[in-house]
Image (cartoon, helix red, strand yellow):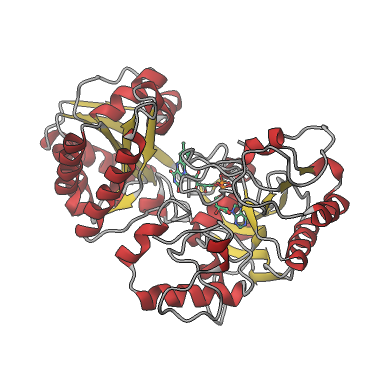
Length: 508
Ligand SMILES: Cc1cc2nc3c(=O)[nH]c(=O)nc-3n(C[C@H](O)[C@H](O)[C@H](O)COP(=O)(O)OP(=O)(O)OC[C@H]3O[C@@H](n4cnc5c(N)ncnc54)[C@H](O)[C@@H]3O)c2cc1C
């Protein structure tokens, strides 16, 4: 998903006449010339056909063409680019691989997109201290590849072969192994960051904990609103001695959910525990050809890892629990090839949905694990009410649901209805005591749902944190916060914000 790396000569002015852009053009010629001086002509794109590559992230329902995309090759170049934007008062958005699913890397019209995909160097590996330092464009999978086979980096988004560590940091990304191992935030020990005024700072370092306020914790998950991460220090852990993986099939998700509860109650902590429902099995099987039985209500993938003897013993226990909960088809991976096939089938679930539906929304909500059966039933009822298929794939151990709302965008109004249904699924998660996002972030997509979870004082506290890093409001404006506000602006009666006047943001 990286952008076009071409030798094509960049074209003319920042704004292309006749390009389908809504807001009034702002003359960015001076800034674009400065960007070209910083990174070289080759790495600044301003023509519409090049910029189209960047108009969306993984949330394809939104698209905006920026005034320019710039691809710096080093931290120093990022710093100079951000400083040039600050001096010109131009807003910018950082982008890694563009695989985000909440519109976080959606560009700003009349803004600059700072794409860090060229920054792919592994800077240091210190296995004696279980650390690796990488540039932000390194993919998640390449971190484990760099320290393997003796060590690995546990957070593993299903997009791991393309998504960047910078994006993972910004989204506090999770993945299948997070139930046992935790999220990105549990592995980032230090960051080098270019702040929105162009200053470069280091937060944290090699050590696990720092005195003072947890600014590292504030930056991880901040969705590109506090600065650009240019260097990331990560903790890696020893690879387990043994790994055992099974897939168990059940007639219903309720039975599979019961097995999840019993496994956890028995004190087993699986490395991963993932569920797919009937529709997700059907779609994934079409793509992966793993021989999964189409028509079964649920597939539960359970992976145990750790010391060989413990793994063996507890694995038998897990097989017994699955059978006691109604599974009559438990398949144990006989070797690494079969294990890889089980995982390929699970990780294919999102893209495979395209085989059974022309369009779909990936939803991302969290519920307490024990509420799985009732929330799944509510999702099914909502699907029936809207006459739409909702397939479910989820990190069952964390209660992190990924309902996939299928629709046909060619039918008038169907996309809007699918979005409405997605919103009602989030309401169901909140009613069950959960959250509007587990790992995909708020971005542009879910900011309107933030007030359902947070009161005005909470949102105000978030805003003040954001302003401490970015008083001019140039870093990824219009994302995360439900109502755009100037730094220093006191919440109160409505006054139009300059970003609204410029058509860059709207209130809900
Ligand atoms: C098929 C598929 C499966 C997925 N599975 C998972 C999953 O299992 N778990 C999960 O958590 N996510 C998953 N995702 C979502 C996505 O891959 C993650 O959110 C990932 O971390 C995004 O990384 P990226 O490099 O693509 O970031 P982008 O999409 O480029 O950007 C995401 C956000 O990070 C900001 N950003 C990017 N780089 C930087 C930087 N250097 N400094 C500051 N801010 C920055 C951007 O401004 C934006 O707000 C999946 C996506 C797809 C398409």
